[in-house]
Length: 79
Image (cartoon, rainbow, N blue to C red; front, side, top):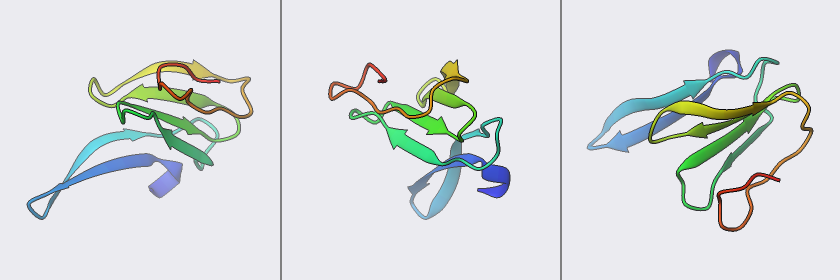
C-alpha cells in the first residue's frame, strides 16, 4: 500500500472493505505472514516487527530487535 502500509481487503459481493491498515515505523513492509489459522498477521520492515490480531484489529506485540520471524506450526508463537 501507500507509504509501506499493510492493508487487508475483504472482497464480498464485489465491495472492498478495509479490515486493517498498519504502517511499520521503518517504511516499506518487507515481511508479511499470516498465522496458520489466519487470525494473526506478522508484518516487519527491517526496523520493527508487529503481530496484529485481525479480529480485534489491534497490535498485540511489537519488537524493534528481531531481524526475522515466522509463526510456529500451531500459529500461537512467533520465532
